[in-house]
Image 1 (cartoon, rainbow, N blue to C red):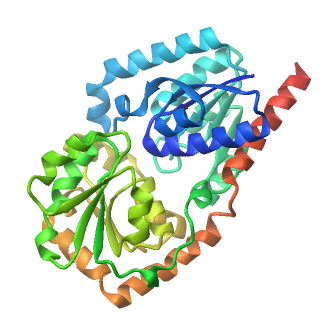
Image 2: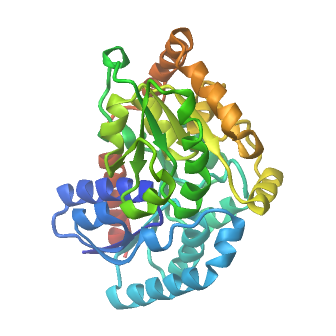
Image 3: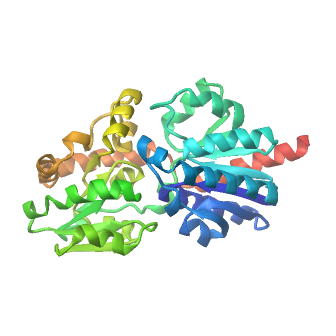
Length: 365
């Protein structure tokens, strides 16, 4: 059996690798091909492209890299024609993956979508494409199941895969005076986020600043921002860092939820290009940008967005979350996440959904 799997960023690479492992645990005869990162490669996926070369964010950044995206689409189509997979698994990355889903549907290849695009936040019109071209949607946030069911999409809530890889920790055990900086995984966002995060270092001389280096980037890329500062860089050790950190500054994305599950008080930060931000501000219809606040439907963590993300406001926000009373309030809310996100075993449940769907199609055929 051949399966093709496609992830376009580091978090998708992580979840894709665990899904591959779960599928191989149930069906060792599966051969995997696709697009992803080091983790998917280590899990046994033969990669045609790496996430480090295709991980773009923001309207303007995507426009500037259209040639690369078109080249990737051509590569993936060639892969599909050559491999003739029994099914294709798409992970988030909606702009590319929904276009690919249409192509696959036209060729009668089953499409399984794992980890939904945030269509409930913006571009709700994409739901029509999902209903038409995706055979099964597997979601990891509890409110997404009812959203898709109401839209007539075949959907399963499988739980959040982070619960399979993040151990429950006791924040009371920490007193190591470490401030973690999680500036993202893409070069564009790191270049915007990291200088501002580093600019507050002088306000916290008693803390060691430690940057979480993304696996898709080179150590030398970070050094240009660090310069001669007393800042440590831990490459591909984000979870180890979060196990020791007292607090964190985190770029909006999956990392905000990871940080919360490690019980680390955080300030959520976001800054895009001016054009991307102005376009997004007019299109996005949600109260919060961080997954923590969205899931719990209240402001648990402070969000500093675009013009509010600067040295002064960031310094004030970090000072606040270092206060013992505020820390206790945040951590108490974090405990609710474990109850809300479902039990462990998301990867195994998603794998079983895919195999069940493929068996049903085989019987019909």
